[in-house]
Length: 240
Image 1 (cartoon, one colour):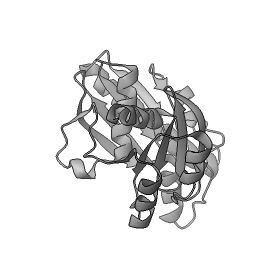
Image 2 (spheres, helix red, strand yellow; image 1 turned 60 degrees about the vertical axis):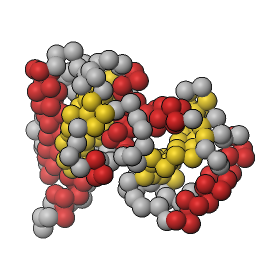
Image 3 (cartoon, rainbow, N blue to C red; image 1 turned 30 degrees about the horizontal axis):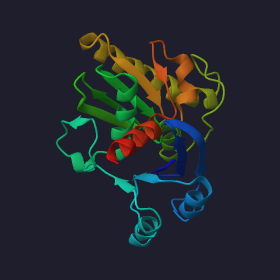
């Protein structure tokens, strides 16, 4: 079995794969890797891949390396099926590459557009040859709501879940609708622009806010909240 660990800004997601299928997944509130030993023993883990957007201290890396011989610390130097045309590959988030790998596995030989609606919203495109042509980053849903509260004197901090009318009928719905519908228009605009040049592009939506957005996107799109994990597992399988 394979253990996939995806350490984000706010939490750590873990997945156990057997024969390319997820048999267990969960989330932890911090980036500590102390739980790895327990999972190795309990689930007979043979290979591990760890992707992180935050720095991991040397003590933890040495600990994981000491308890499993097949470990990949995934970064932009790790071999993947995606070829990079990016001027600063050392700054390219590993989660963005992994999501492209996961999408490419489901649509081989096709143009792919991956929209990851998480803490930040990333829009990444790879052509039919598997070459990453670039992408964009903008604030995520929660970040936009927090910014409205933090940078004004009277706007409240509101939850992202709730009514989203076309036009808000009070301050809360005006804020939520402005943010959610603004993101939807943003995503639809990217899809329309890419499809104008690549009409057969496969569009994938993933990330923590995927469920809040998928039913309101008009374009044909594939929703897969485990796209990054599937990409990491594919990379791990190809590495040993």
